[in-house]
Image (cartoon, rainbow, N blue to C red; front, top):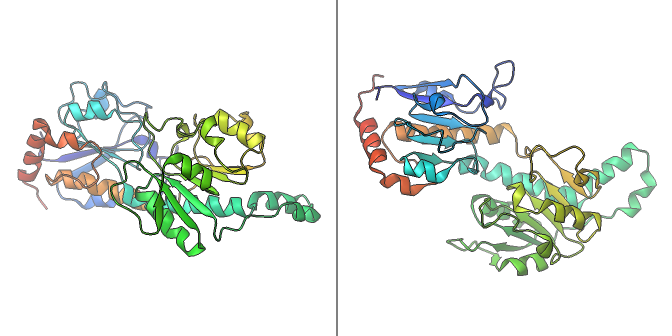
Length: 346
């Protein structure tokens, strides 16, 4: 291995004109680090190839997939730093088997995604988009037909008591809501939050917000049977991953007014087809997997991801490792020893 720690950044961070699409994402941390160089990959591909990644110690990855084929005969790559918290585009088993760490950036998304969920909640409760359309169309008198739903004393049920779910409760507390969560893997309680089974949460909640990861276990977790448990006056919010919800079943429930409305930042297939029947409904607010996109969000994600890379460059295990079993891999331990002992010129 070279004395220089090389970082490859996937090219989908760039606009067609070559400028950064998300603004400042903290790449100055890599720029200033002694003994570290970084560059954008030469090609923008949906799946990274082995020949694209062979020369790098670390990758900062936005959307491209990392598969077993990506890692074939690759013996230098040590860390894949995901720009975000989802890692369903990365083959965890293949990375673990090759001693490659996968890191995520929960510190960057905690407040922005929780704030996005709260934005959906308030917009739905006040029928914001409906009233916007009435005003633009000069249908002022119809406002009496669109009474909103007050949130004080209502129940917010959150599926997934992790980083974002806990932050959402922090934002909701001043509104005087009853707080409820379902997460079979939660390791610690959250003050003032009732932890219940999923069916109880769905029956009791006025607002159901999905904040869990997409796994084989959570795929279509919210299906037709579970949607049928919700109140007719309830709202569903999804700021996690689209396939957690059976979209066809949700479309039917919204069309037939079996639930009052939904706020969706994610879909089963993205981009969603403009002809999808979901988009014809007036009781759903949709955004293009981007509602949390703010300068705060991207700078926080980028700095967290870059800090993970710099930890590895110094021979340290990063904080937010997804596949912790990889830390015991002999090849990974050998690489970390090498990085910790390499001579770095300031």
